[in-house]
Amino acid sequence: MNNKPKVAIFASGSGSNFQVIMDASKAGDLHAEIVAVVTDKPQAYVVERATAADVSVIAFNPKEFSSKADYEAAILKELQQLEVEWIVLAGYMRLIGETILDAFPHKIVNIHPSLLPSFPGKDAIGQALAHGVKVTGVTVHYVDAGMDTGKILAQQAIEIVDLDREQTEQRIHAVEHELYTKTLQQLWSR
Ligand code: GAR
Image (tube, rainbow, N blue to C red; front, side, top):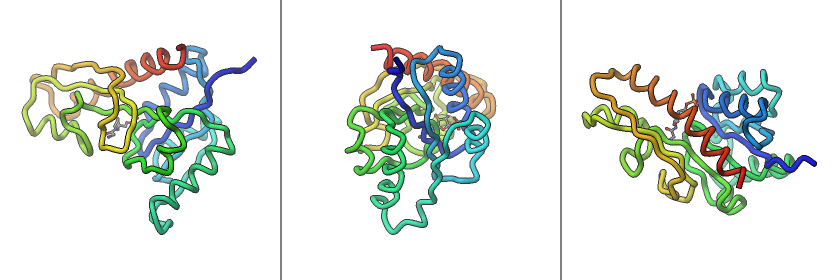
């Protein structure tokens, strides 16, 4: 019996988190079936990764819709056809609106490159560096209607003393890949 939750990953960029989650699922280390990648950036590298992994790509340009509700309704229709049960945001750079939120209550998670509630929103790493913090980190949380405000599932701190932007990004990505996989494993083994 295949009772693995069906998952869609939303991403706008490179998709390194998508890749790690996909690989863990294929290796049997994650009890989930990744059935789609949803992107608002049809040129993003994550699309190539999804194609290589044989995963359906749902790519809509939000600018081609008259409202956010219409844009999300188009995505929702595709997700429902694929019987998606969970949404994992992995570098999806848009706020989820109520059309998708209402269809997936407590079934959307996000990863954010800071120790929330510090530095929500865009360029969290740049915000942390501009403030000169010595410690930043990574947060995995449920998604609600706010900007990175949902209930926190997991966090990991990272010391960034004497690290430049590139080194900080590398440290954060490495921690993200491990923490996201581990947190999703726990979430779906319950
Ligand atoms: C990750 O660092 C993720 O935390 C961040 O985008 C990056 C995506 O990397 N997300 C946010 O900033 C959301 N507010 P990836 O495309 O290589 O997975």
